[in-house]
Length: 402
Ligand SMILES: [Zn+2]
Ligand SMILES: [Zn+2]
Image 1: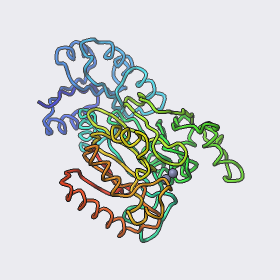
Image 2 (image 1 turned 180 degrees about the vertical axis):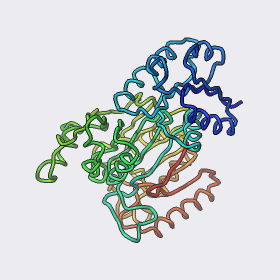
Image 3 (image 1 turned 135 degrees about the vertical axis):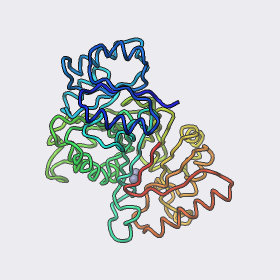
Image 4 (image 1 turned 90 degrees about the vertical axis):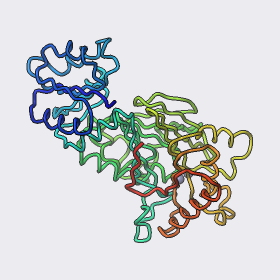
C-alpha cells in the first residue's frame, strides 16, 4: 500500500497541485487548509508523511511543527516543511525543531513526486562533478567522461548535502547550487589532500557567502592539522586570497577510522592503500549504501589483512566508486604510484558482491575512446566470470539514484 500524505497549507493552488500529482501516483492524500484541530485529525488518520507550510492563518508553522514533533502518536510521521519562506535562519530553526527536511516552493508536479519518492524510499542521489585523476584534462578528447578532478555530490532524501572530494569539479557544483539559491549547508569529505582532491576548494563560491555553513572533514596528517593542510594551498605564494576570505562559516573536523552519524546518515571510514593517509567513505542511508574509494592501490594491498578488511568494508554495497586508472600493462610501469587497474577494481567488486561498480579517477592521458575500451573490457571480464554486477565508467554530469 502506498503511503499516506497529509498537507497543511492554506494556499489553495499548492494544495490542489500537490493533491493531483500525488493521488495520480497512487498516494493517499488528505488536505488541511485550516490548522484548527489539525492535530487531533492527524492523530486519527496516522499519516506517514506531513508537508507543512510555515505561513498559516492563526498559528505559525514553527509552533505547529513543535507540537507535531511532540506527539507520541505521530512519531512515525516524517515532517517536511514546504514553503516559499526560505531564509537560512528559518530553515535552521525548522531543523532544530525536528523537521526532517525542507522543500522549496514553488514546485512542479514532477519535482514534488520525485521528492516524495526520495523521502519515502530513504533514497540518495549521486552526481559526478569531477571524475578525472591527477590533473584536469579538458579538451575535445575528454568530452564524454569529463576533464575535472574528483568531486562527487550525494544528496540524501532529507536534503542533506554531502560532497566527496574538492577537485576542480567542485567549482561547477558550487555554481549549480547557487543557481538554485544562495543559502547552503553541507559536509565536504576529503579522501586525502593530494592536489587533484583539494584544488577546486578555493573556487567553491558558496564558501564565500555569509550565512552558509560547510564542514570540511578528512584525515589530518600526523604533524599537520586538516585546517592547515587546506589553508596552506591558499598561502600568498600559491594563491591571491587566503582561507580567511571564506565568508561562510567553514569549519574543519578531522576523522580517523570509525563510524560517524553525519547528516542523518551513517558514514563509515577506512584508511586505504595510498601514499600518505587516504580515507574511503561508506555512506549508509535508508536501505542503500555507497562506497567512495578512490586513490587505492589494490595491487599492493595484499600485505597483512588490509585486503580482507577492504573486502569487508565494501561488502554488498549498492554502489562502489573505485579508482580504475590503469590497465594491467600500464600498471607494470606504474606500480607503487597508489592507483588500481580496472581489473583489480572488478576483482574487488566481485569478491565483495557489490551491485554496481563505477570506474573512477580516469587517467589524464586517457581519451574517451580509451575509457570506452576499459569499460567494455571490464564488462566482458565480468561476463566471463559469470558475475551479474553492473559496471559503468564515471562521467561528469552522470546521476545515480539509489
Ligand atoms: Zn587522485
Ligand atoms: Zn592521491
